[in-house]
Every structure is written in structure tokens, then in C-alpha cells.
Image (cartoon, rainbow, N blue to C red; front, side, top):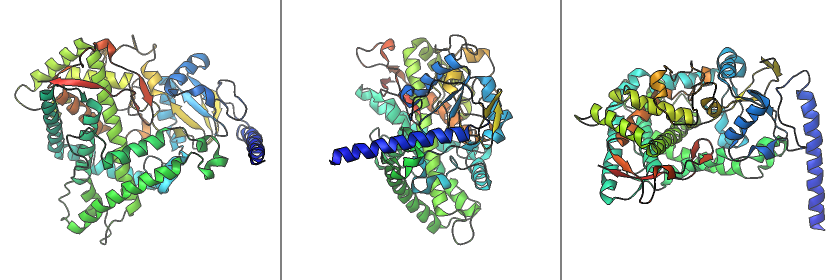
Length: 496
């Protein structure tokens, strides 16, 4: 009897959802002409066809339906997917004011995260204030120059760890080592502390929190597809993410409290947290409320650590698969730093190192869609009418492999960037790993330096694959999440 009752209520709920989604689609689509897309199934829309690697699915769909198409999930409004440089320029530059809002996943609303996070806020005064704070006190040319020695120190610690491992002759988990180094680099820039053991490849408390946040944000959530069910949080993602955010804020609160008690003199800001405390103080503490401070610090960790690690790991995988590139890159780095340790100012100017970083970002952009945009109002785009509140995804991964833009697009050929002038700042829309427009990644100036510095530090070593492995055996399969990571962690042996 109970089973029959449960089946009855499930059937009723599904029928109701179907009717409501049909009515909603009719209302929201009134007067709008969306781009074409695949045929919809009742209730679920196109959910079942996306698969585990949506960036690849969307690239295939673009070949069938064009560089701008529509795909729908459950009750959610349509996603408009863009896959060409020209239309990306239209969305991110020409019509940026109309497409710069954020679609917020249900899980990101945990612990009030979305109302304080620079990642999810609309372009309002609070967002502008936080963005200005980051630009001025963390990634300005002066601040980056002032803290260059700190980043050099972390690169030396990474090299020292690899030197120890080289004596053992055992493979190193490259992603794990780089992740620890990145976390500690960011934590020292923010508040002058290490948060994990410098030589640790294993999960620690802080790492576990970070991984928990990334996991819950990166997995599909039925609450996003069927908003009427969101209050139930059927998969528990919002509840688990709230636990991770609370743990993260508890860690950060202790650090902030200690720094306030130290009461350092104004004008001697040794890190980002001191700049917040003294540059934005009401005389009694923080003028930014504590929740916003914790959220901002957490966002900077989440935004920097995983993307940097993912890019370095893919770069190492590609050079190990291409011994010619490895030899050429090592020769350039060794020649540049034959007198001593790696230097960031020199590393960012090495032509072939630059080319390897760019080619890695083209082939393996760490965030294939970045965070989804949302239309602020109804938008005319390429002859179509996109209703207010529609998610707009720019498929950076597909653009990076577009045969109309790139010769042999699936091949790792750094030399292509020695032959053409392409920058990072969002003007060359065939290459926009940090996006463009007002939502461009705020940490780009720091990421640019860290990627070159860390890869140069790794190139102080010769590398060999574990016994029995050939370059062609390196597993290049992907795992889609908040970042596009390697499905199988990369292991290799450093040799001095």
C-alpha cells in the first residue's frame, strides 16, 4: 500500500512539473525567438544527452545546429551556447552590459554564499567595491611587485621538495605537489600563513574543505533543473556545501581575529588581510562585514588554487607526451637561469615558456565555460531574441579547438604562438582563457605570473615517466567539474 501511494505521488508530481514547465515555457518564450537546438523530451528536456563531458557534447551540437544554439534542462530556462570568437565578442564585449548578470546554482546559496560572493553577485555597487579592492590590494602591479619575493620562496620550496623526491626515484603526484604550493602561495599573499605542509601531497584539513566545496559545486543538481523542488534539496548538495562553508569560515575567522588583535600600524600592509582591516576600517573592526570578508578570502582560494594546479598538470602532461617540447623548454629555462634560481620577472618573458603556457590554456582551458552569464534583459543576438534571465555559456574549449581559427587544433604545438601575437586580456576572442569584459577573471595578473614561475621551477628537473610507460601512454582523459581536470592524476619522476 505504501509503495502504491509513493508511486501515485511521484507520478502526480512529475505530471504537475510537466504542466508547469510547459506553461512557463509558453509564458517566458512569448515574443522570443531562441536559436535552434536539439529536440526536447518531456519534462527532462535535453538533460539525458549532455553526458559527463558537456564541453565536448556542446562542441558536437554546435556542428549540427551552428555556433549559437539552445539547450534546455527540466524546468530551467534555456541555455544559449556560443561557440565562435565572433559571437563570443558580441556577448562579452559589445553586449556585455546586457549579458553580465550571473546565474546562481542552488548549491551556491548555501550559508548565504551567493549574497556575499564576488563570483555570484550581480554587477552592483557591492560587486564593484569588492572588485576594486582585489584590483588595488592584491593584483595591482605594485602589490604584485612587492610580493614577488614571497612567490619566489614558494617556488624554491616546491623545487626543494622535488629534489628530495628525486633521490627516492619514485613518481611524484605532480598535481598534488603543485596544489599544496599554490594553496600556500595564495594563503601567504592573503594573510602570511601556510595552510598546508609545503611538502604534502596528501589531503589535509584545509585541502579537504576546498575539495568538498569544489565537488558539490561541480556536480549536477536536480534543484537547478527543477526549481520547484529546490526547497527539498533532494541530493543534499546545499546542506553539505553549507557544512564546508561553515568549516572554512571558522578557519578564516580565527586568522582574522588574530590579525585584528595584532593591530598592525596603518601603511605597513604586508598582505591582503591587513589591507582589508586598515584600509576599510570603521575604527572598531571591519567595515566589510565578517561574512563578506570570509567569503572573499574563500573565493580567492577557490578561484586560484584549482585553476592554477589544473593548468600546470596539463602542461606537464603535454610536455611529457612530447619529448621534443620538453627538451626545447628545458634548454630555454636552464639557459635563462644558469646563474641561480628561477625569477618571475625573467620567466614571464621567456618566449617558448610563454608559448607552452598559452598552448596549454588553448587546448585545456581550465574552466571550459567559466561561470555562466545571464541576460539582464531581453537581448537581440545574431538575429535571435534571448529572453531576460537566460543563461549564456561561451564554450571556450570549443573555440580553442575551432579549425577555422587554429591549424591542427587538436595537436600540442607551442610554436604556433611564436608565429602569431595573441594576448591574454580578452581582445583576441579565439583565445580568451580568462574571459573578457567586466566579468573577466580578476586574478588574471597573478595567475599569469604563477603559471610561468611554477612551470619554470618544474623545468629545473629532467623528468621521466614511471618504468614501462612511454610518452604515448600518458592518460589524457578528462574529468569535468568546476575545472576540467585530468581524470587520472599525473605521476612522473624528477631527475636532477
